[in-house]
Amino acid sequence: MKGRGFMGKIKGSEAIIQCLLEEGVKTIFGFPGGAVIDLYDDLMDSKIKHVLVRHEQGAVHAADGLARVTGDVGVALLTSGPGATNGVTAIATAYMDSIPMVILTGQVPTPLIGNDAFQEVDIVGITRPCTKHNYLVSKAEDLIPTLREAFHIARTGRPGPVLVDLPKDVVASMVEFVEKKPIRMQNYQPTYEPHMGQVEKACKEILKAKKPVLYVGGGVILSDSNEELTTLAKKLNIPVTMTLMGLGGFPGSDPLSMGMLGMHGSYTANMAVAKSDLLIAVGARFDDRVTGRIDAFAPHAKIIHIDIDPTSISKNVTVDIPIVADCKHALTAINSWLAASGENLEEVGATHNQWIETVNEWTRKHPMAYVDAGETIKPQFVIEKLDELTGGDAIITTEVGQNQMWAAQFYKFNKPRRLVTSGGLGTMGYGLPAAIGAKMAFPDAIVIDVAGDGSIQMNIQELATSKQYECPVIICILNNNYLGMVRQWQELFYNKRYAATVMEVTPDFVALAEAYGAVGIRCDKTSEVEATIKQALEAVKKSTVVLDFRIAREEGVFPMVPAGKATTEMLLV
Image 1 (cartoon, rainbow, N blue to C red):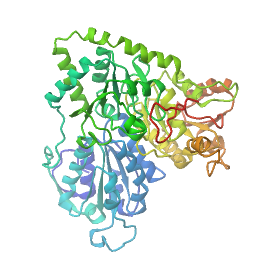
Image 2: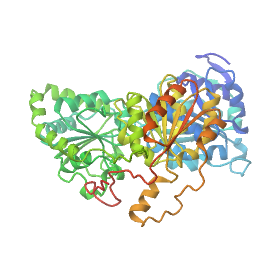
Image 3: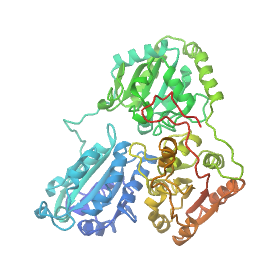
């Protein structure tokens, strides 16, 4: 294969690899098949590392995990038909959380499209609702421009997954590899710079607010604007709450941090939003899990909303001052305007002291806590010990359910891109392949998948991927022999009728780990938790580790806002 910068006729499969190289792609995740066999053959001669997963959903989740921790575009390669459809759930996961990805799918030759050929599906039609954009490359001359455009769309504006469907004959064709030029799309021009008139309006409201709250979403992580956000919060003494996707956008252990808000957010965060007079939403989309009953959400507050996606503005909650812009650019402009305003910002911050004291009093009265149960392991204690023993510096991926919420509540995320979780779609089986993607990106990092005994079985086959590529991660299973979150709802609202949530047959996770060549460790006493985690942190230097913590079976996630209730109507125990 020719090196970078080569111009001239090459095979379509070689051109695809050249495009990946010029986009800086070093690792892709995939599973081969007949429709992409030419591309796989040429990958053997390239510098790109291909990671063979054990299921196509795992490939897309792993690419997603890599994208979240690096900010780069993740790439997955799937074959046609069932290979492509197996990836749809993971594509939707990335779409809901605005993760930059390019998914390459094989397709039957163009003359057979529409003839119900072997392993043919309309993957473009199937994924249209869950991709930022998608393409069917029907002509060889469109191959290279389409791939370059796909990466541009995936990483710019509000990021998201872009699918490119590749018919086998197009991949095998000879194409002209032309020089890359700046991409300009007339119908796609994201707004990065804020309107200064809106910035001025926002700043004037910020200066006169007595009970402001910063409400931070995943957009702060995606735009790498955590430093600008922290500057604003500290300069003006403004308490900060984060969505699940925003955790790490502001240091979780900072005195101004109120933790997560919403359905399983802290009492402090939910009360502060309800009592605030100004809500500054940055890179958040007012998801139903955050707002609860909309008519009772921030009822006394004027709302400033910063988001690069204009369709998110006033979509769920009507806002007073919209700012359509990249979060980093908008926060930079706000900080600059405030610095040049002539106001004494320390004095402005001091006017919030009474508000901060009110916030702190809520925390003192209703801290994020749990009831000790002696030698019966509480899952919250496990997460606290993980935080303590890793110095809060691990990359934490999660499955979905109670395990996810306990991780969000009790691990203090002080840096961005350290929490890797399925927020919008809530996809069970996400954590293990995402952990592999994160570890591939940062081989020296400690990567821990916090899992439940139900979720981990969705993609547990990826233990083989971890073993094959010497990609050691820790899988921390909080094992209660239930589908825990649904069971909790059944306990509270369905008279403890545990319909289809009892895991009557659960594998021996220690033996299963060993079958995959991993280390398995079981722990069923509180007094052994710390030693077990220390053992895992040592063992993971050489091997993937599966920890089976037998936790209190009917432990719940609290606080909890019941469906249809206001966020101030929290169940605390």
